[in-house]
Length: 110
Image (cartoon, rainbow, N blue to C red):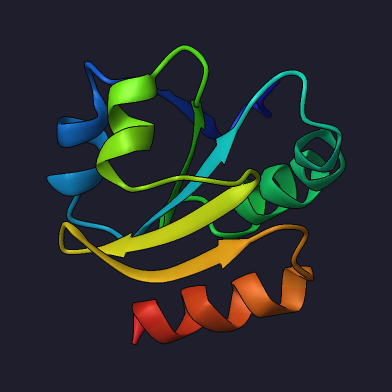
């Protein structure tokens, strides 16, 4: 359930793909059964395409990757976190307007 510019993130690759990334990373914590997650998916795909080459966008299936979800204390989904230099700099819980994500991403790019 990810667009062509969205990276599938797992417990196994999270360190390399997100925490060690040189570029900011927007991470969508979601699950297949989550209706609001499915509603947010097109926005995440749009952001991935729009910021391609400048920001990495990935998705973590919280059911399949419980260790990563627990490490970042994901208690509700969808939760979207923005990482920069290996640190979480912004966290959104629930359906969030695209403009809010863009403002956070633009700030991380400066």
